[in-house]
Amino acid sequence: MNRRRLLHMLSSLRLFLVLTAIMCVMSCSSKAPTLNLLVWEGYADPSFIHTFEEQNHCRVTASYMGSSDELMAKLHGGSAGNYDVISPSSDVASSIASAGLAAPLDLAKIPSYDQLSPQLASLPLVRANGHVYGVPFMWGPDPIIYDTTVFAQPPDSWNVMWDPKYKGKVSVWDDLSTVYMAAQVLGYDKPDPSRLYNLSDEQLEAVKKKLVELKPNVRKMWSTGGELTNLFESHEVVVAMGWPLNTADLKKANFPVGETIPKENTTGWIDHLMITSGSENKELAHKFLEYMIEARTQKLVTDKTHYVPANPQAGQFMTPDEVKMLHLDDVENYQKRLYFWQNVPRRAKYTEIWNDVKAAQ
Image 1 (cartoon, one colour):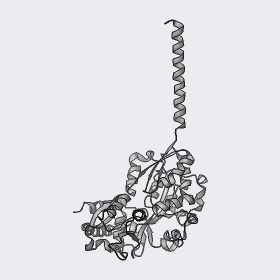
Image 2 (spheres, helix red, strand yellow; image 1 turned 90 degrees about the horizontal axis):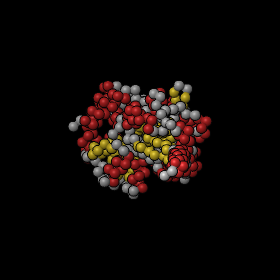
Image 3 (cartoon, one colour; image 1 turned 60 degrees about the horizontal axis):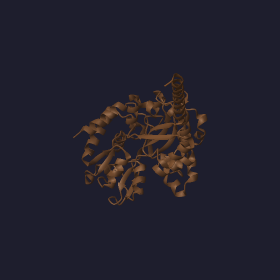
Image 4 (cartoon, helix red, strand yellow; image 1 turned 180 degrees about the vertical axis):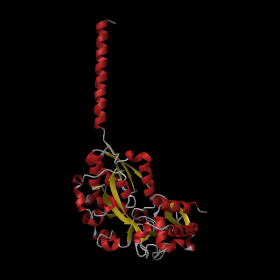
């Protein structure tokens, strides 16, 4: 091979490599961005997520959390950078905001924020250092869910969980909300419901005793909504503390399910959407928050979860029956029956008590 031909071949090879590199860069740069979520079940359903993906030429992937403590463990464990958007409830939202685990929001990029319920948006839960760190998204109760073939009438008290008649047929959530429920049964929410979130050592010991007494009735403590739904469908349980999402899913499966708030009332939650401080997609995340609190999207989320939307304008896309079912026609009185989760100053002690209950034989 002569020298001229060799130089020509080397020149062609260099050109090929340069073009390949340019094409690779162009391919990588045009790759659709991915928004990673760590949220409660039902908050990333394709019925409303797909539209956002199409509008923003992106992908949305979701991991689901089973409790607020699981969320906190992941954020404090160094996983915050793995997620862009999270949906903390009102019991840990304040801690996340004050700990610098979430990014302050630019509300100018979230125009639908002004449509949110003033009762929710005015709360100090996600405000710190003069900034807003989250948007109210959905809210609702922790109701009694029951099999209507077993209960001719809705159970009227949390005490039904302790009835020996239902030995091995009860389920409770593997979460501190079960501690709150037992404290309600013991009357510790009177006269001030906020006491549920700041019980004394003596009260917590009484709660532990009460919950240990419940254990013979507990078939299983559920950790995900899907798990509780399966427990009902397999007829392993007939009554439980659950979520409206369970009721919705069981009704879709034609299971004979009922839902009620007992005479003691119940705890409830306000879920927020927040952008993690470690997110590398904050611009896209702001667009996601705006999309998720728009009235039309809020309607689609309620279709999936049966939770109450934070944007009351979602009611314009609902039938009168849907408005009534979600209590949008009488929000103020309905909220009086819910003791919204608050920050628990002694959360470690509550967790210790709950772990003692689970370990008890």
